[in-house]
Image (cartoon, rainbow, N blue to C red; front, side, top):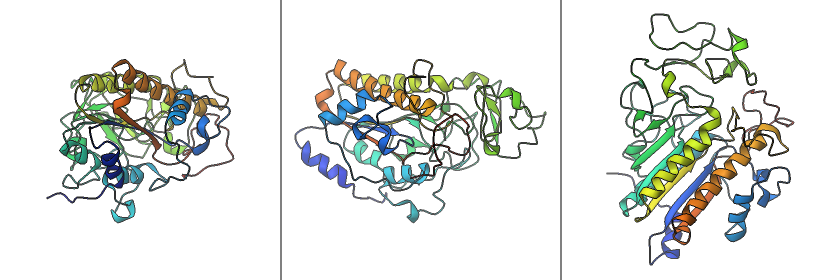
Length: 350
């Protein structure tokens, strides 16, 4: 039997929409600071879509996340439980197993049990599988065990390997003739040559392979898309995502889900990853802010918001949908040492 927790926000929703089931979309930012959007005072980062939603809705000024870092905060969003009550709920690495037990009642379960179609699209960072993850086979348990009918996820973070998408338990576009292997740490030692799969340079050993911006030792593993990552990876070339295309890929997947569910209630967590390092937004967003790549990534996040809002309008769902914009935690500017020119005096999770 699943442990049922009380979600006060859903009790409020039931009072507000007693006569009908509204669609609910949580647009979940990553490392978005209080002052990163115009409606909270940002002057050098244009966020017109978020600002318009704030002007037409409710703007909260005293709301807090459950933790100052990704994984524990995301754990609390789904479970309603403070992360300190769950042992080992810390920042998950790429090979972490599923942190939330399948028998634990989640926010997605609440909606699913009330007849909603449910999905999570974007950054996950809550672990996968209950044994050693085999990226070349079906990966489970995962979001499907926690109440989500559909998922299209980045397994951990942009800077952690593998840099692939997982859709409903399968790595997207994987060619099994080029199997994926992921290893943590020890950048001075390449993956043995006997392991099959496309080989990628290691930033610590081949720094010239980094064509974007350098990172610290932690980000000196395999170089994918010219960016050093955390860990080492081999294989999976056809499945690699392109950092500059992540926003478009996630919006396209969310659009397909929304269009497919337009005649029945749905719950969607759109978990953007634009702001998390490494920040490499699409070229059409670069230079659009006065705060370097991080500011440009915020412009990308705002565009994602606008794309979803505009689609709802196109489908006639604007008045049937509640949109909640929030972030897993506050701003992280340096984030372990990607030297991307972000202007800061230093930062920690907030």
